[in-house]
Length: 101
Image (cartoon, one colour):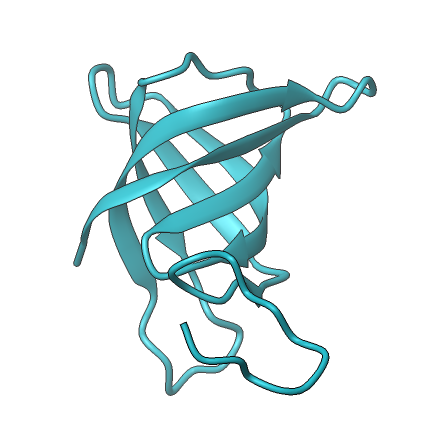
């Protein structure tokens, strides 16, 4: 993969884009809804923080809204790959976006 600069060495297929946006989360199997805070996006993944602990391989639907009215929301089917407790009742959830709409 080509370097983006002299001090940059990206080991992933996609560069992470940091986001600070509300994430609406719904459980695909039950329709339960939750809210989280987006942390970053990549070409095929996302990371967010929420107060709900999800299961590895659990399927979710995510909607990440832009504060800018001229940008469409990102809607994606999502599969949980990593869950990390932050120790304050919050969980960091990372996973793969299976289908972006």
